Amino acid sequence: FLVAAFQQHKTQHPTQHTMLVKGNASGRRNNILQSVKDASSSISMMRLTGAVLVFCCIIDFTFKPKHLHSLRAAVADSTNVLDATKHKNNVSLLDLPLSVKDVAINVGSNIDPIMLADKKYGPCAHNIAVEPIVANKIPFHRQLSVLPAAVSSNPGVMSMRIYNVNGVSSSLAKPAMTDFWNSKESRGDGRLVIVPVITLSSLLNSIPKRINVAFLMTDIQGYDFMAIKEAKNTLKERVTHIMTEVWYDDVYTYSGVHNDLCRDWLPLMTEMGEFGYRYLYYDEFLFNVLYNEHVS
Image (cartoon, rainbow, N blue to C red):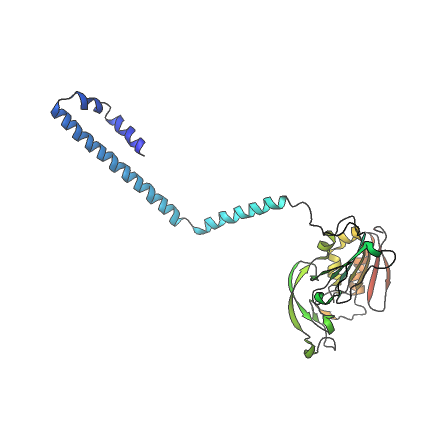
């Protein structure tokens, strides 16, 4: 601003500096007074210009809608998230020993998970127990990992109701009827706890491709069909045997979920048969077994 004012002053009075030198005493005095007046006028103009600019800046900052600042910040944050996501090409894998060749997964294991420990698998097998209620009560084993979570079709956090001894009948769903296994108040039946929920496909995708998922068992109190259906595309590529709990003859243990052998499982198994699965058998304990000949 000072430079601009000086240039303006020079343009309006191009000979003033010469006049200060060449004039007589009276003329010099008059010229000096005129220069002082002009300088004062220029300085006043600069002050006025600066004040107007400052006032405009204050108005711009004060009266600009705050949601506009928030919107710009949100857009910037979302752009950063998208840029970071672009670099996430690989799924995080479980750090399992290189000696592991086969894995068994037991979803809803309670305190006694299945173990691949026979002569066929031996020390090269590892077992994963997924248990949301009594994970801390499962005995330690060097070939066993315990994941304290429930499984459903969508990840998140849900309320689970605890039923029966050691919570063996606990479920994300409500019981369809009142029975001995869900109505004992002294045992704490019906108590609600908050549990983390994962999907079956996310667990399968976290296992390195070099490892065969030799066996998958689900016993999750009405959510078996939902969990398997969500992961069907991943199952066809990774899992050899599947054993799941089903309902039969219109007997529903829990309400609000679908898990019937005829109405739900047979159509899904027909579809999965195209992936290579064969229906092996259905036992008296209401368990359904599938075998994937393509993976094996």
